[in-house]
Length: 251
Image (tube, rainbow, N blue to C red; front, side, top):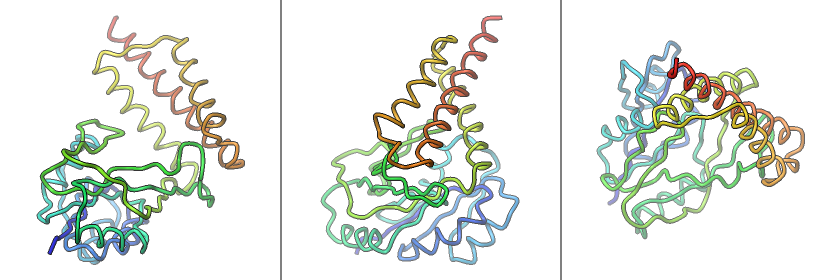
């Protein structure tokens, strides 16, 4: 019988980890790799039956998820974030496909909630992410932010979807944008990319247009407008930070 490991990386996810773990209780093994939590994340995870390991440093999202992947021991692996939930329908689809896999990896749709509204446009839906794969046939990219899974062999799309709760409030959203924009700017700078003031403005404007108009964010109401504006702000921060990294290197 095919078995399943679930891997989750955490840091101060006490408000999320319990519901997340409950949603994957059907798995044969649940691994939580924690990095510096100062809340009850680890205690909650252990109480839910997860195998909890601790990393003393933070190498970035991609490398950290590969560390968690290395701890998995079952035939297949499902990677899930603490702010995501597996619906009962998705759980049934996973169990069903593992009985007779037709591919080595599967993409899963993700339905995200923002300020109490399920976002159906703005580039947020269906937001397919590759998260279920046969162990040994895939791994995460080493990107410190916006990591993804690279799989060998056929990739299919699984029925069902994750529920995603990425931002508890606007303060959380702004903090994530600040942190992610710093990581992304450093990653681009390390790859030799540079920008200008016009580049900063161009990326900012295009991000808003792409989300709000091309991807029809206006159909998501005021939440769609806020998402487009904050995404544009994230682009502005990311390229502004890259601009200063480039300038400081030249001094």
